Amino acid sequence: MKYYIANLAVHVVVTLIMIVAVIVFSNRNRKRKTRYVVSYFIPSVLAVITALYAFYITAPRLLDLSDVATQNYYSYTGVIDERSLLNNTLVIDGDTYYINPLRELPDEGSKVRIRYTRFCNYVISVESVEEVDISGAIDEEMETAVEIPG
Image (cartoon, rainbow, N blue to C red; front, top):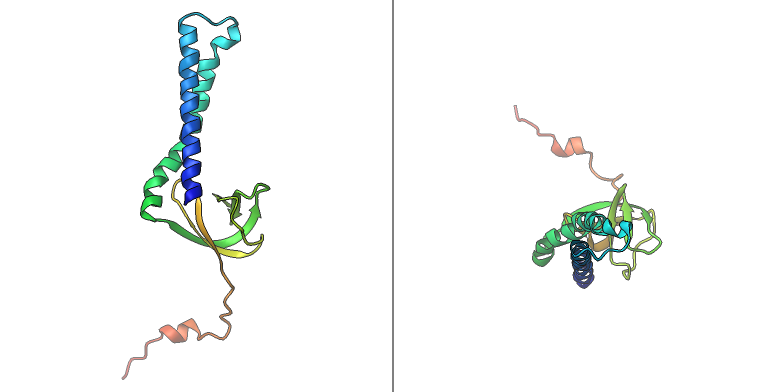
């Protein structure tokens, strides 16, 4: 959870720095201090990049803050398809999940149970799950059959 909070803080700071840069460049344009034609468009381009960054990266993390604070997580069991080179993402059954890169993870192809946040798919915990042999189990039909005395 410490990594989640640190990650959230870094993304909020980056978003705020980008907003300040948009304001500074816009003020330069308003005061007509831009020297080159290309620099006139910097605030517009930077504003679009800031909006996309805030919408796709920062906002989901902020929305998940209440779930992390109350420890309300989703759970999923699946097979790890791949891990990223930086060890910060997992692909489990085709879905991408983000994880603390300092954590030790099971190998690819192993079955795991993860607990993750709702909006940004940040993994809180990873547990290896062993395959259970059910070949000797009672047949499901026999288990659910009801005999009516007659």
